[in-house]
Image 1 (spheres, rainbow, N blue to C red):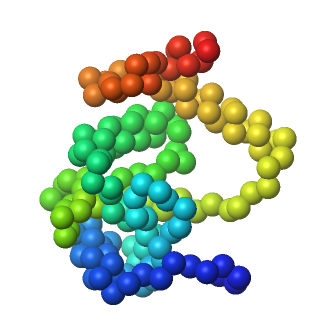
Image 2: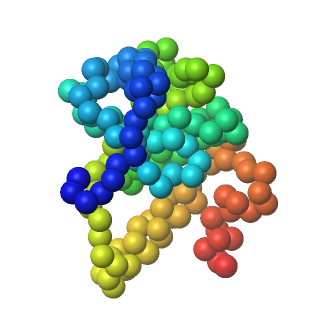
Length: 161
């Protein structure tokens, strides 16, 4: 990318990323770039013959139950025609994460996007999308839909506020 300095991927990370690609059945890596801006996880965009993916080395504080919640919520949203969300991929053992060098990794499909200028039609579309999200999630009933933060998932209360 012209004028943009991309973070360099060191040899150790590249070796681990090849293992991640193998365990998630992504094929041989054709190109890879480290995505900047994340403060929680290390995130990499991987391109293979099978497509473009995001591999994340998860921060150690993430419990596996958090990844399961992500997977279940993503499926609920997709089943309700809310499609533009990262879809997690299961590894060769049908698990959502894999441990390499004492760190958990997850992989999802990459969602291509353009940098956009803020304007009124975009703000209106964003608000509509957020409303659709909250509407769909208000029908989500799962025993794991519990948070340690009071009213964190109480969509009705959030909408009323």
